[in-house]
Length: 421
Ligand code: EPZ
Image (cartoon, rainbow, N blue to C red; front, side, top):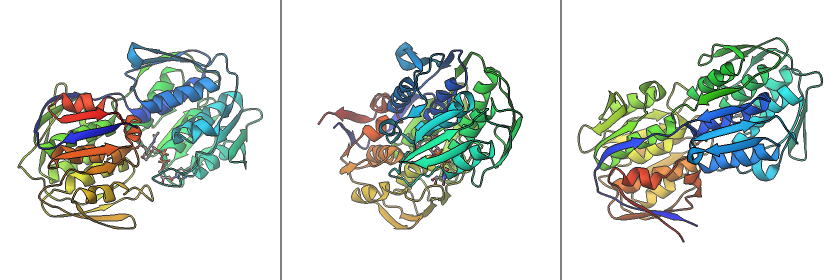
């Protein structure tokens, strides 16, 4: 298995191009199941999760053509062969469950494996199921699979979500585009990836209003057509690379970065003593002094502080001046990066969903292990500032969500390389 070796202490200067959003592409790709016309996605990220979603869609009979080194994906589901999403693919990536809504909407049936738990939590699907049942789907759990059918098609309905689940909002939004009548999603997730999905569905002919607010209204139509859609910038990759110069010093411009994608994150950076400046090409980031200040962080649904940036922020706060308290309110087990950071000399105390971080002068490089996607990148960032060498193993987690990370960071002066075991 590959590892990444980072040698700390070099200030970073230059530009990093931010890719299209993994979590947008993973819901835009299944949208092809709603139409027999082709869906072309541009600015697609080159990630292993995209390859997994491609394999899943191809197992259903979808044609997926990748062009321009994976930046353009052309998908067509005019010749479907199956409506079953197998466990061996779904267990690798929870987002596979996003084929449920589209398959039900257009094919009136779907058999989708429950994803099973993952490192950060149990990740059930009760909100998805309750919502689709409100639209007249009949869903039964058998042998670890959700067996769903909608004889005569889905019906528009009022769909209150008990929690603003991103995936459930996406499944219902896609399903409602072809349902008979009007669907109103209440307490909908407001993430930029939802807004991006709605834009794409609208360009396919869907009638949608209210995306980005707590209430989304969808008027079902008989069929959807072809579309070409640019994947929105990845706000989590953006936030991750914005932190790089805060760890290592220097100034980095994140090309494609937009303030509206990272509002609450930038507020916390400002409080921590970091300047973020809008430029014609993106966002420029530089810390005001040679040591960030401690800040408290609580993860919330958008537009609150994103759970997917919690690990990276914790790593940065390990060497901030003062004590920070981080509360993780979205997932039940998302502090697995803490023990690894402690190995590097961090002072962190975890009590349930709350972590208290007492800033130390400097971390020391050490061999550490990636446990999940965002935890792994927090260790790479910590290595940028640590004294000596940090070796991060199990970086297959990293390749799920960060394209060419060693090129992007070495491009701004980091001493980082990938070594094969
Ligand atoms: C999406 O996951 C993202 N993944 C996650 O990013 C992100 O962390 C998460 O949203 C929250 O922002 C993709 O978009 C592919 P949820 P999703 O449904 O849709 C509970 C990354 O690092 N819940 O909003 O699965 C659930 O257990 C990944 O890129 C239920 O209880 O998130 C969790 O505690 C990690 N029942 C909370 O809600 C349900 O039916 C948030 O889940 C659904 C969810």
